[in-house]
Each structure stands twice: as C-alpha cells, then as structure tokens.
Image (tube, each protein chain N blue to C red):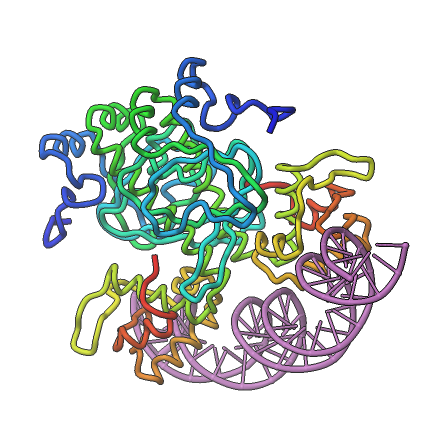
Length: 233
Length: 233
DNA sequence: CGAGAAGTTGACACGAGTCAACCTCAGTGG
DNA sequence: CCACTGAGGTTGACTCGTGTCAACTTCTCG
C-alpha cells in the first residue's frame, strides 16, 4: 500500500485549517485499521467509541429496519470523517458502517480524540462542520425521496458519483469504482431492476455508456436535465 | 399572555443542566417575537443570523424544491431549539421556518448567543445535542420514506403528534392542536386524499375518532401496530 | 470449461397520486 | 335568525409508476 498518488490526508475535512503541528499530533494519535470488502466497522445503535477517517476504499453508511431491510444513507471515500458524533457526549451511532471494497481507516478512540479537540479548537470545528453538512445532505435527501421520481434520483446519484470519483476518459467521465446495479439502486432508493432499465434507456439515448460494474457519463448536461436541473443544495 | 400553566422554559432543551445564573443570563439576552399563523420566520438558504426557541405555538420546518413543492421536515412546539446551526461558523439555513398557528419565539442574534456559548459550555452542548438528535431523526425519516408504506408513515406521524401534544380525554388521547388533513398529509409525505381515506378507515376500525381539524386516538396499541411496531429510533 | 455472479427483459400487480364531484360544517352579513 | 359562502373533508373512478417474480443471457474467474 504505497502512498502513491493519493492526495495527502493533511488536506481533508478533518485537518483543513489546522497548523502543521496540530496535524502531526493528531495523525500520531491515530491507529490504522484494514477492512475486507463487506466487513462491518460499526453498528447502528452501538455507543460511539471512536472517530474514523477513511484512508482508502469506500464505506457504506446505512440504516437497517427492524425487519432487516437496509437503506443506504450515503457512501463515503477517502478523507471523509465518519462517526463525528464521537466528539459529542454519550451517544449511539445513527448508522451502520460497512466497507464496500477492501478499505483502510484511521481510528481515534474517544479517549484519544477528546483531549485533542480541546487542545485544537479547529479540530472540533471541522468535525462539527461535517455534521452540519451531513444534516443538510440528509434534509435534501428527504426532499428528494418525497418529491422526485426514481429516474431523477438515479440520475442524481450518478451525478454525485461522477463528481466524487469521476475520471475523465475519451468518451466522457468514467465513474472510477466498481459500481454494481444493486449498489446504485440502493444509493437511489429503488430496485435493481428499475435501475437496470433506466441505465439501459439512457445508454440508448447516448447519455451513458454502461457495462458490468461500470458506468461512463457521456453527457453531463443531459444527465443533469434528467436529474431535474443542476445541483440544488 | 399570562404565564399560566406553561411548563417553565428553564426546563427545556436549551437550558437543561445549566446553573440558574446561566439560565437567567441567557434568558435576559433574548428578545421575544410574535408570529402570525402562516408567517415565515426564516428562509432556507439565508445565512443563519439568530438562534430561536419556541415559546408558544408551533413552527413548521420545511424544504422547498426549485419547482415550489414544499416538504415538511418536522414541526416543533414549545421549548424546541430552532436554527441551532447558528452557533457554528458561517452557514446557511437548511430549512424554512413558518408558524402554523400564532406563535411566539425567543430570539438570540448570533452576536449575542456566541459569547454566551463560550461563557457557558453547557449551552453549546445542549445545542449540539439537539443537532445530533435532529440528525438521527432525519436518518430515521429517510429510512421510513424508503421502506414504509404510506399507511405506516401516517400512523407514525399520528403517534408522534399524540406523544408531543396529546391530552388524555374520556375517549382516548386528543391531539391538542388544530390538525387539518393537509397538514397531516404533509407531515407523512403523502396526499391529502390518501390521508383522508386512511383516517376514515381507521375510524371505522375504532382506532381513531376523527372530525374537522381534530383527531382522537382511541387505541395507541392498534395505532402502533399500524405503524409497524412501536417506536424505533 | 464450468459455475456462479451480474445484468436484462417481459409480464403482471398494486399502491398511491390525481381529478372531479360532492358533502358538510362554521362563520358572516343582511 | 337564516341563507349564503367558502374552506375543509370525503369518495369514486381512473391512471401510472414501480416493485416483484421468473426466465434468460452474458460475462468473469478459478
């Protein structure tokens, strides 16, 4: 796992605006943990006992219903702060975190992160900002689930993925991560069958190129139209 | 507006656990503002310039789509902290706040609340706790919108209202606030017609008594069953 | 090359939204 | 005091988007 072309962690949500010394001290306090694909990092309802930052890979944050249904709330990649509520008082986790692919996370047990947020107020600010951002995203999601069609939601999910893990290729923007139909369907809150039909239709219309575990966006504009206008936070 | 039988504000989310002096000082820094029914207190997307606490009445927090559709995110009554993001750095409001009935709110402009949260850490903790609670509620709502039927959602909305503004009467629990079908439908994320049909059916089954702007829950147990099991946070 | 995972496609059912017509009260002004 | 009016609510008919299930195809990997 050579630290090749990865953007430096110093530059991610948790460390933005901190002094180099604070960054070094905080990083030194972390341990690193590897996760297999499908492995669970923490369970909804458990007490929060650590703060995490995604080093590599991709985590799925989901809610499970009492009947065992699972709803993907969001997925996060490198640099994302996870379980930010760790810096608040005794709380339980609102979601379950699972690795979608083999991943690696930085771990700060509460006992180690709490003194640090006291010492470095910027750290606390960054975590709280993340929580506020997630709040806004959740509210937007509620609105989308209430008013948008499945087509719009799938289109918006693709736009999000393109923005987050898009890579420019000859034909357009490749979503640079294995993306199964089921996974996309979970993100958009629909069934695999409906997602499959939508992708097939859009591929016919020249909006996308699709393949096994693979999507290339050929026309961002058309996709934005399908999503019902460009991003609205 | 005599301070009749209202539970004391000292006892609400913002002040829990504070010293009496801190409560007095904080209350002294607030101004009070009256709102007509339907009046807007703040608009989604505006910069947050104040923290509010509901004194009397009821506010609706909603998200509006670019096309003008409106989705009720939640409604709050006496004692609720609103626009808690005010204590974070420069942010915009994630929702619009509107009075459902003539209401009264306490107002702390940012410039006045910020020094107070520094002076009284308990104040900050209380606001952050509220934000975390709302986060959890939003995630639960996302799950419900994704997996529950409209019937379950309406039942759950009624349970919430009964818990929040329920008053025991001879026949059961009266939801002690004017509750139009449209309003209930908005809360559950459905149409007025569907809400009306559901209420009519449940009234037939003896679960509810319904009338113009009025609902009485006759059997909490049956309603919980309809909601798909008792509360699951 | 075989087996299983991933994806596709058609047939079908059904929940819930939409619209129109209608009913029924509460409040108002003559 | 009563008739009128309009908001609130109900109900039926209809449509349509999506979920479900089954059968089938096509990759990928060991």
